[in-house]
Image (cartoon, rainbow, N blue to C red; front, side, top):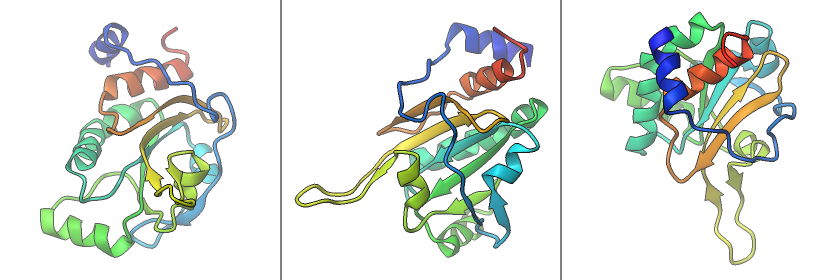
Amino acid sequence: MEEILDEAKRLHWESEAHPLLGKPAPEFSVEDVDGKRWSLKDRLKQGPVVIVFYLGYWCDHCVSQLFGANEDIGRFRELGADVVAISPDAAGTTLLSYKKYGVRFDFPVIPDVNKHIAQSYGVYTPAKGDEPEDMAHGTFVVDQAGIVRWVRTGTAPFGHNPTLIYELAKIKGLVK
């Protein structure tokens, strides 16, 4: 862990300015791809959460980000945190992808087919007039009190887990 935190100090990505930064994370309570009820409010009772919005299993960069998070899930959990991934893919699409590639993630994956959760986090804008819909990648670190402490959104997924681990360590008071 010390090595990861040292790397993160050297190569740390600051949070972007975002309307949710420093504010309560929008609550959601839905079924994950396995049909199990998952609630942000309930999960926060156990510790912080890293929320990852990805475009879908068709996006290789997104899936790489999820594989990276899966590789580091032990480090996230060592800090009392968990990861949840959210995409517009239907549950069946994700389950077929698991079967096709023979890999499941060690964290919940939530279908957001209607993109309501993504919209509440500001990573989805529906089409309006001549403007097409817009979906961005997004990674949010939410502390145990439900406050968004760190955000990155954009055209590419955020894949620097040492930064996320560092932010979680800050929440726990392990680094300044």
